[in-house]
Length: 324
Ligand SMILES: CC(C)(COP(=O)(O)OP(=O)(O)OC[C@H]1O[C@@H](n2cnc3c(N)ncnc32)[C@H](O)[C@@H]1OP(=O)(O)O)[C@@H](O)C(=O)NCCC(=O)NCCS
Image (cartoon, rainbow, N blue to C red):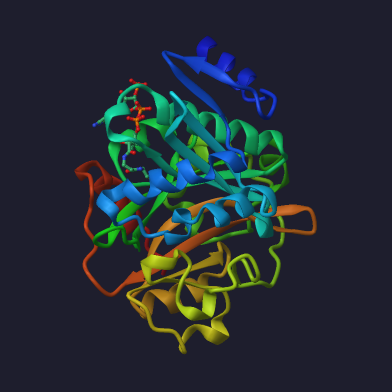
C-alpha cells in the first residue's frame, strides 16, 4: 500500500459528525433542519426521474436519519444543500450501502462526491458495519469506488431504473473483521474461475476452508418489507427473491437472488431459468460468527442500458464463469 493510501486509511477513523470546510463548501452529517434542502436536491436529480420518491419527503428523511440510523452526509454552500450521499444500514448482514450520491450540477468536478462518499464509508466502518458496498452507474463513481478501495465484484444487469433500466457495477469492501471471519467451501468449482481468483486477490482475502450452512438463498427477511410487492427500490420495479418458496409467484421486469457460493445445484437451477451469474460477494452472509461467500444471479426481462462502455469488461468476465 502506498504512503498516501495508508494516510487515507488512518483518516477512516475520523470521529462522526466532524465538520470539514473547503472552498466555501461545508461537509457534515445531515440533521433534521437539513431535510427540506435535501428533499429539494433529490427532486431535481436525474432530470426529475429519481426513482426513490421517499427522498422527496422531508419527514421520511428525518425519520431515516433519526430512527433508521442512516449515515447521511451533505455538502452545504451558503446555507444550501448542494450534495448528499447516504449510508443505508443493512442490518441483516451487518453491511451498509454507500449510495444515493447526488451533487447539484453547477458544483460538479469539485471532488464533492468523492469527499461525501469517503465520509460515509469512514463513518460506516467506524460504527462497526463489516461490509461496505455500492452500485456504480458512471465512470466518476467507478473512480470514487477505486479511491475508496471498494473493488468491483460484479454487476447488476438492470436492477435500477432512473429513466430507463440501467446496468450498474457492484463494488464492495469487507472490513478486517469480516475478512477474519470469512470461510470458503471445500472443493467448489466456482473457485477455479479466474474472475473469482482475481476478486479474492484484489481484496487480499485468506481462504480458510469450512463447512457451509444449509441456507441456499440469503437476503434481508425484514429490512425490506416490500419484497413480495415486487420492489426493493420503490420506483424500479425490481424484485429481490429471499426464498425459493416465493420465487415462482413473482413477476417483475427484473429479478435478483443471492445464494451461498457452495450451492452449485441451486446456481445451475437459476441458470437454467435464464438467470446470469453476475456477482461474487466474499464474506456476504453471516452465521455462527463466521462469514460465507455468496453469488448474485439476476434476470432482466427488458434490455438494460449499459451506461458506460467500460462496464462491459466486468460483464464479460462473469459470462466466462461456467459451472458444470
Ligand atoms: C456522479 C456525481 C455524484 C459526481 O459528483 P462530483 O462531485 O462531480 O464528482 P467528483 O468531483 O468527486 O469526482 C470524483 C472523481 O471522478 C473524476 N471525474 C469527474 N468527472 C468525470 C468523468 N466525466 N469521467 C471520468 N471521471 C470523472 C474526478 O476527476 C474525480 O477524480 P480525481 O479526484 O482523481 O480527480 C455527479 O456527477 C452527479 O450527481 N451525477 C448525477 C447523479 C449520479 O449519477 N449519481 C451517482 C449514482 S451511482
